[in-house]
Amino acid sequence: MSIKKVADLAGVSIATVSRFFNNPEQVRKETRQKVEKAIAKTNYAPNSLAQNFRRGKTGLVIVVIPRVGDAFYDGIVSSLSQTARENGYNILVKEAQFNTLTLEHYQGMISSKQADGIVLFVGLSAGARKTLKPSSKYPPIVLACEPPTYKNHHRLPSVRIDNVAAAKEATNYLISLGHKNIAYISGDKKSTSATERESGYKAAMRSARLSSKATILEGGSSLSSAKEATHKLLDLPTRPTAIFCGNDEMAIGVLHEIKASKLKVPEDISIIGFDNIRYAEMTDPPLTTISQPAEDIGARTMELLCKAIDGHNMSNTIELLSHHLIVRKSTSSPHN
Image (cartoon, rainbow, N blue to C red; front, side, top):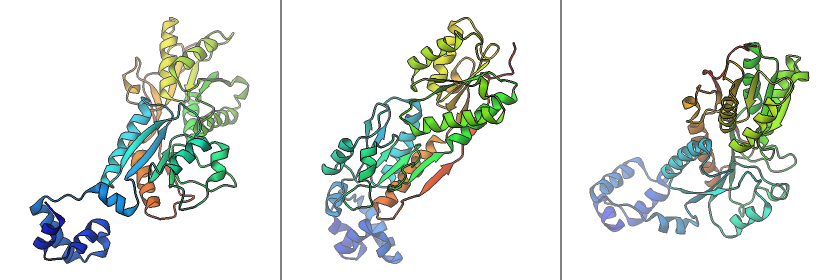
């Protein structure tokens, strides 16, 4: 079915139908209703590829995540993709392997005009940050989960939770249960959100005058590195009574190693994670964790990017979404 048939049925010009699809706000309400009825009768669908070509757009958004297959990012990307489709975009997921996005990678995306916008779940390298200035030659970027801590440079819009406050809440919960010897296994140091969570843990221990008992090991955000960190903690002269992990994947690895060492959770050691991935409530015992609103993060990130692509100035826009402490059976008062 052609656009001409739609125009004939609606009693309007082809240009008006085209305007209805491209700039509906420029079409009068009565006319829009006529076009909508004609579209419904004819089942006409515009060629989105041709539309995007005329607009100078690709209809594509690049999404850069630390690692493909990560349960936390799966949930966010699913929501982001749905919102993208609702706004006429498809997404292309790229993996950064927990590395910051370099200037070469970033310029490659620009020079090849691969996408109309970029969503970053990873940080930018110093070289890439220096190139970021509001300019038509750069596709809009929105940070998701990572804070825009780029001093003296163009500040990117971001959607995230307050990682420092969330980590404080998790640590204070363990303290409220009576734990004093609380260890922290951090995420990958390249991630600013990981360093923020570590800062929150330190702040809570400091406020409770427990800094001398603070123990921090790097877990690298993965199961294998968390397992290695667990054995180091269990080999300490005085092992911790509680372990706070920078994400749920590490917490699940810690839980497995503690049980493999013939110790009990939470009787011997309490464990708390971060993210509330879909596996957290299915561990044995179910994992206490900080819940991030994955669906909201994905949807709001894409909505911000769409506004930026449409020409709105979204610089310095920071949306802080709410986190929640989910208490399950992996934490209790110390028994020793």
